[in-house]
Structure formats: structure tokens, C-alpha cells
Amino acid sequence: MNRRICTGIISCIAVTVSWGLASSPAFAAEEETVSQNKTNANLLPSDLLQISSTDAFSKYVFLVDKSERHLAVYERKGETIEKILDVPSDIGKATGNKSKRDDHRTPEGIYFFEKKLGQPEIPFNLYGNMAFTTDYPNIFDRRESKTGSGIWLHSIPDTVPLTRGSRGCVVVRNDVITKLKEYIKLKETPILIFDKVNYVAKEEHDKRRVALNEFIEGWRKSWQSQDIEAYMKYYDEKFVAPGFNFATWKNHKNRLKGLYKFIKVELSQPFLLLHKDQLIVKTFQRYESNGHTDFGVKTLHAVKTDSGYKIIREDWTPVRDNLAATTQNPQPAAPTN
Image (tube, rainbow, N blue to C red; front, side, top):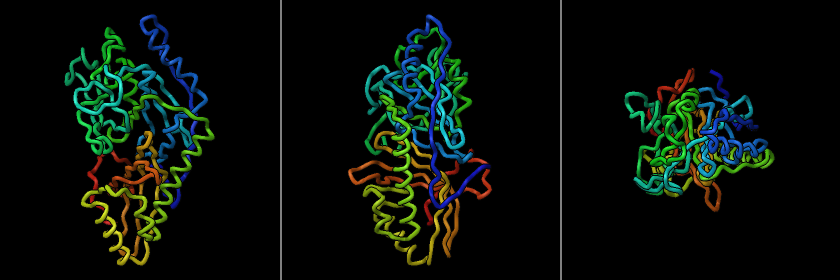
């Protein structure tokens, strides 16, 4: 597996291209949505900043624009990202961001595909040939007490208009979902759903990406230097990790500082998933001290505040150093470092 570990952060630059459906009178409205998006061909999505170069993570990201009713797929291409698919999609009957069960709204946020469903598990007239479940409500949603479930990406028969409105799911054509399944790695591939995707010039995109990498690097350096006061400034007062809250996490780090003469923290190029004020960072992490060494996947959930991003949850999953893939998806372990 191609995996790079470094003490700092490797940057990733992005470019875009476009792809559309074949012309047909029945799909005129759907084609118009795609053609409108071509005006953004020389710009970059402002919140899709970096897809990790680590092969164990997904090399694809799905972006849904509810206002233009389209779904795009971005792929990592070396040190860049490239838009490889741009297709019409349907969304919930009701406008706005989902907040409760049965409100018929499509949620907005960062989600991951969890399970693939097909015939005869699902009724063809409602879900077409295939469906992929997501992890709505996610950590951010639960923090805001949002309710509901069953938010999928699914298809519909060709006889059904792609403008009828769903119960909150993202919907595409049968032939499209057949293409999309090739880009989905369960538990790993994210789908970012926006009311409207904002695009920026490359210079602004680079600036945003660098700022987030500096946030992660600052967190890593404060941890490695065992400056606990500076380190804890990266955490929200409502922070949680398996078996910890903010106070017990600080006590845990102070205890380890008394045990270890030194620590060293190395990170791979991180996967940066941003949605407005919500941030998910996923990276391989190697931890070494005079008393303990481990290696695994570190996942941070953070929110933007007036004083910068604050981590609200941290998970670490141990993996073998000779890891070939993360398809087994072991459960997060309580941090020991």
C-alpha cells in the first residue's frame, strides 16, 4: 500500500473538469442543471480542500448541491483533485436542512456510506436497482439533537420523474447509480451535502487548505511538545472521546506527561472534510514514547468557533503497521496515548 508518514502536513492542490448526461427531451430539465454547473469549471469547491494520498482511505468524495439538484464526484489524482462525474439528482420534498424525523428534508453535512442494498432487499418502484445507506444522524447532528434516520443515496426507475421529491434521500437514475457504485468504499467514502456548493479561485482554495493544515500541525506540535495547556486549547469544553470528557482527557494527558520523557507524533497527509463550520480530519497516526508505541487511524471532529476550530470528538482505531486496507473497519479503541 502507498502510505506516507510525516511529522508535518503534505499539501494537496485541486483542479476540476466536468461531465454530463446524453441529450434527451425527457431529461431537458436535468441537463439544464448540469450545464449551469459548467460555469464553475475553472473554480474549486470551497469546502473540499484535500483528499488524503493514503490508499487505505477513499480516493473519492461525493458533493451534492441541493439548490442546483446535482451530484458531483471528485477523485484524488496524485497531488490534485479532479471532478470526474457531474449528474442530476433529486432531493427531499421539503426545502431546508433536515432537523427531525419525517420532515421530508435532505440533511446538510458530512456523511459516510455504510451499507449497500439491492434487489430484492428494496422495492424497485421506490428505490430502483440499488441504494447506499448513510450515517445520518452523525456526530454533529446528534450534538444538535437532530432526529430521523434512513437517509440514503438511491436510484429510481426511468419512468419516474427525477423531480418528484424524496422523503429526504438523495436520488439518481438507475444507470447513474451503477456508475456511482464503482466509486464507493463502504465506511470510507464521504458524501458532502450542501444547500449550495460555493466555489472559489485556486488562490483562495489554497489559502483555506493551508489554514486547516496549520490548525492540525499546531495541534500535533503542542501534543508532541507536551505543552498540555496549549494542547487543550484545541479542544471544546464539551469534548468527548471513548471513556473521556474534557476534564478527564486533560488529567490523562498530564499523567502521561509525568510518565514519558518524550513523545513523537507523526501524521500522514490528512483527509480534510469541511462543511461550513464542521470539520472532519482523518489521518494515519504513529505515536512513540519511551514507554509506549502504537499506530492507527486518528479521526477528529471539530467545529469552528470565534477563537478557531475546537475538537469536539476524537477517535483512534489501531491498525497493523503493514496494513493493506481498512476494509475490516475495527471499532475505535480507548486512547492509550
